[in-house]
Image (tube, rainbow, N blue to C red; front, side, top):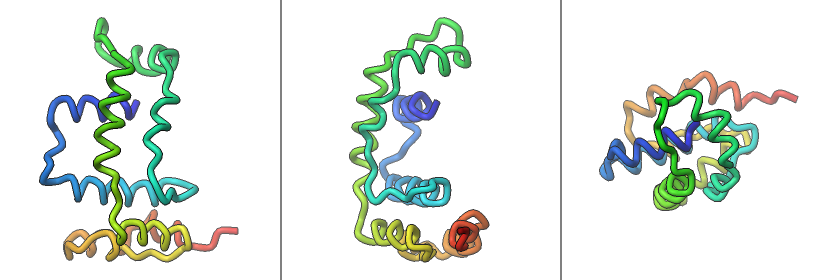
Length: 133
């Protein structure tokens, strides 16, 4: 469950503030290539839809026996983190707009030449640009 994983990454300090920009850009990129509808803003309130029943049926069977999961704390921690992380720049918004219009412009998202060289030919991004009526 992504909520659980993200919560633990926050809890154990695996996200460095110096890397937040790159993390945000990675989230934007992978959202664009993996979603049918490209969001123009991120709605962190969707996290509220995760129920105790969902935790019981989907998460508890796959984590350490006896591990306590405090759902409301996880939700608020992750929402607070994402609300700060996902404040998009104008270029990031432009990337999402262009992507939803079948225009792949990774230079709006990344300025690092190594990253750009790797993702310019990203198969999923290129596939999403095809007109698949």
